[in-house]
Image (cartoon, rainbow, N blue to C red; front, side, top):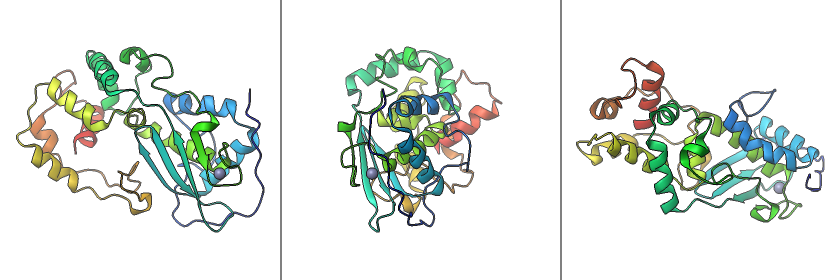
Amino acid sequence: MRYAFRSSRSDPLIPVRNGISTRTPRGQIGQTWWGRRWLEPFEESVARPVLDNGRKYARKGQILSITVTPGDVRAVVQGSREEPYECNAQYKTVPDDEWTVALEKLSASSLPVAHLLANRMPENIEEYLGLEPHRFFPDFAPPADCFCECINGGRFCKHLAAVYYILAERFDEDPFLLFKLRGLDTQVIRDHWREQWGIKPESETTVATVEEGATPQPFYGGDVEPLIDLEQQPIQRLDVLNRLGMPTFLPARDETSIGALRRFYD
Ligand SMILES: [Zn+2]
């Protein structure tokens, strides 16, 4: 069943300079199976005019900012009104104690860990985690869990749809972001794997110093870390990875995994 949300008016959009837009001007949004998995329940539930307008907004770069924190997505979207709209979608997080068990299960197998380190979501991730269905990949959020300032009020609208499409691409690039939305921060995963491999960093302070060198993109705003640094240059600093070493289950010259590890640690 599709939710019979109001379709959108066709007032002219106020253009945005350097807004957040989809990577590609046409074609399918969500190139990975997990990006599609994120979009499918939403596309099956929301009225087509809302989806079409959301895609248009996302392609035109009408999104001014998106922040993802555990259980919460907030965005600012420029529409036809002078004042941009603030949007919010909320999701139930997996409680910490359940995540502790799930992370142990996931980390017991080298295959899913290697996939994730290469920024690929293992196909049977929910089985590895041992979570109930929809605990990791959220079912489509009912309207009560979404809010936008626009005329559609608490209903799902084109502004929220645009945010959904942008998020699908971000999940494509960074599967750890989905863990974060469900309540498990990348730092916790990182610390767990570092501990599991028996690698003791010489100084956590040194690790932190490396991370402090990162330059966030200003347009993401907010007081949480940006989704992704769109203009990030290839990371050259390998100090942390060189000191911590490679996980024993990865081939020493596996450049794909090494590249992913560089990104993960630096
Ligand atoms: Zn709206």
